[in-house]
Image (cartoon, rainbow, N blue to C red; front, side):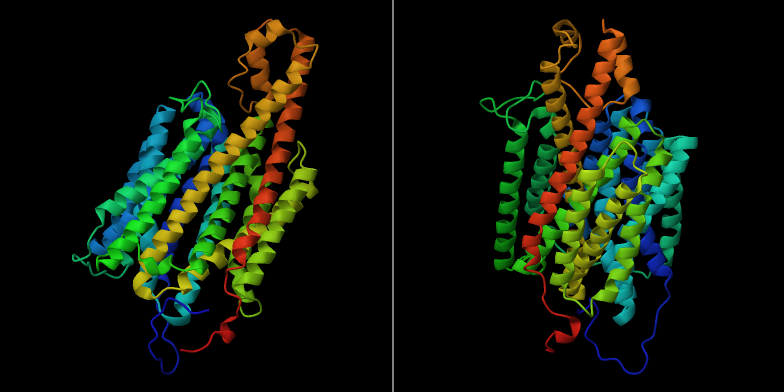
Length: 540
């Protein structure tokens, strides 16, 4: 594959630059990834601190992704205008402020606001990462740096599950996020080791493009995030309004997609008029780039779904501590990490199309296996084996698809490539987390209500005492506390615990089967990926 480097001729051995700037760049990527991975691990602590349902914690991921996805293209242009180094430092300072807000938050609403602020910082950080690599490295060393940037995300996930799981279990989830304050401060200090970047004050900002792109992302994310509370099709009582009885959530998604189409059309109009669009059309104007984006969206959405589902079940359903989540997720995270690094060794033997097809088949096989073998104990070998298989496909795809996007564009478009990658990954993470939450809770509610309607032990009077319109995932302890305030007899309590336990495990199994279907559907965009190896690329 080609690389981002300039096509200048080289003589003799290539001069290798210091890896210190790459360490700073990787720390920037790890800061954002660590934050996102820390949220599900801290789920039980946040639920207890704020007395809020676990889906509220999932909303924190959504709000962070909303800030990044909605304004990342603006961040890319501002980075070009003011210089990538200065913008990188500003973003690190803003992230530090966001982490302070989260650590000191007295309510869930302020914690969510802190994650939204972190999302704005991420919108500034993400597009500068690829630009900084292009500014500091050339040739083979640049290709290695791009690979490490892809694996830094997986490294952060592994460290987050280990460190945050331990700290959240034995101290508090606030101490875990306090570590990110230190991380942000160290990143800000080390950023002075980066080369000065030349600002380009002549770069114009397409304000209409900013409005269209941010509005599209906001509508899509809010629509997906409220499917559970507002209703997937018909409006529920919690919906702020209804459209002839229809939920506003799917309507918001449709509006968002329409605005996104308008943004693409507007960008083409700007380019035709000789003006600078918000994102360079060269990075999205071919079927290959579009299908790469679709495939990347699918795999990151599945990753977000798994990262939400597993901690949800371990911490809320089983009532295990956060450290247990770290242990259960470790095989998956380590497999993603090592595969992300080692997959580059296969680039000379197989084409991107072949690698992506095989990787999606691995994800499909792994999730189907998990749907079959998952039980109440996540430490059993069959479940660990399923997570490892999924991790093999996950790690291979994230690195491969990022590489396909990066290597298809020249150096001067590095910021636009970084913005496209950031929008795709963060939007996918938000949608994956929101959709899996809606699907699991919806399945849980349907199964519980279905069993209660046919159960002779649970009386109609007891059903009236329990609010069945707002069911969510609850541990056995929470079930006992909720029914303790009712007239439930010991037999009724035992029956309610049985129904809830069966519904929880069945909902999780169906959720994994849905991921299997998504992985198989993702084989379709793989047909548009490059079907040649590097030595088969015709020279120009």
